[in-house]
Image (tube, rainbow, N blue to C red; front, top):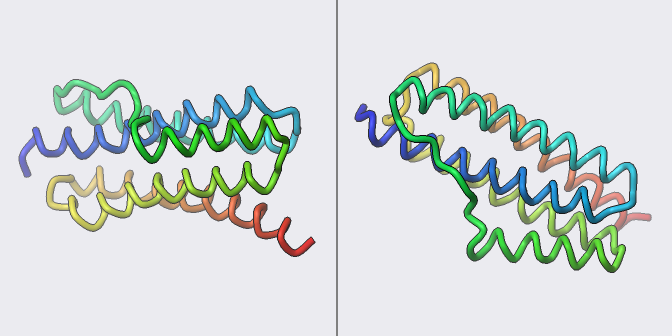
Length: 152
């Protein structure tokens, strides 16, 4: 296990959590629906917790913590879609866009767990698996809310 590779992997996850924090903060600021504000603030807290744990690992390795987001390409479009949906007050469109963003976050964690385990200590693997479980639960919550609108 090479420290530089470990730091790269951890920073990839920090960046995806930065995306979630920024995206859900924008969504929180744009909506007037209290249940969505509660949902978004919970997701922000979850990502802040994940980010802090990942930053602590990078710092212990003597690395530089990634700042900023991946708001190029896919994620940028997702949050612009969320903003447009919020402006139009279209709850299903909001939740569709949030699920798309959650798919990207969940996918990033799954890719790390599939491709990068050799770059992570057992302690880091345990931390990332626990974070993945939380990210997946957030994804499933958004999906469930969205799907309940379809059947109404």
